[in-house]
Length: 153
Image (cartoon, rainbow, N blue to C red; front, side, top):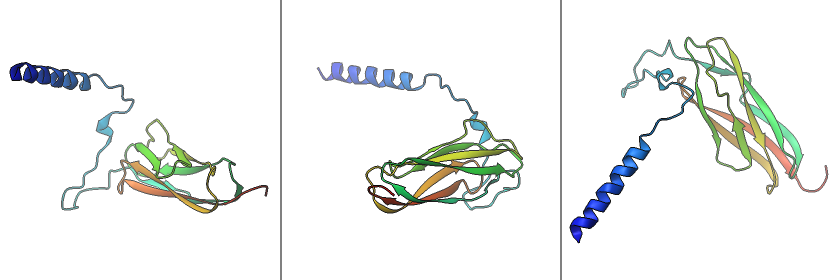
């Protein structure tokens, strides 16, 4: 009986391994990520992309609860290689971000659209969106603020 159970477990494990190794449909090549830092922190960073934002914070002012707003953070790749934005996330369900799905070439500009939906929150809100890129440093924080009121403004 133990031999049959072992064989079943091995068979299931092999099936899961094979299923997990299927073809991926990535639009961007992983070879675009070129981060030369080593464990000791030294490395040539002059050839990396450089993401520069016009501003990293936006104040929506006073909002009515449930009034969804959006702000486009504009940036430029001032580096010497392609910029790849892999994610933009927030720790709050009320804040979301839309990132470019394409590579940003050196000298090109782009934008990250941050939406804020204050449904269910009241008072002063300060939210952070963490943007992860292949630049160095690879994380940039974007900030949105609002004072959420109940009723009509």
